[in-house]
Length: 238
Image (cartoon, rainbow, N blue to C red; front, side, top):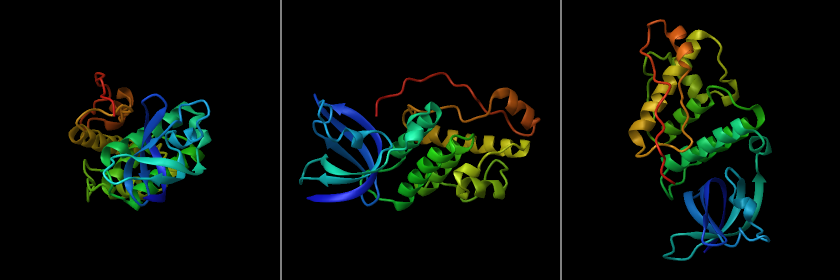
């Protein structure tokens, strides 16, 4: 069977001598794993289709009883050059892709999740990194995956909670001490969820919390301190 679907590359790895295997989150088929034969050869023509967070229309060939489909061609829509040329943006984009890889089941499409990732990459490409980007994406993915909370916790105001879930990512830059405290609490919700749900740490995981000295200043004994440093734990390969 041959079909075409829009997708965003979440993960790639070399396979055998010249092939690559990618995890692709598609609009109509959810997360699927595919093979690109021969792309590591010098004359490989589909190498760009296997790069992380490439967004393209893929032509896919599948055979009955085979686990992996094969990419035979397609059309690249976006490669996000500003993300690729900036280390901070690239690191955050890879974090989003790994979250999608770890929190989405195979072969279960969700237009909401696809659009969430595409929106995050688009705004990251256009506006760059802000301190709320990671927490906002994680909270929204949690909600889309069925792990979201109906009501705010840790005394986060409903207005701030709604903004973290629905406002454009580029609008989530906060300077007010109370907002920064609420952001720290949102980061703690994300950290607790990931620690509880994932069986091994994210390879791209960074500390969500504010630096200790800022946190102590903003909490003023009204909120229990949040750990900002953890011992490094070796992450298993995806």
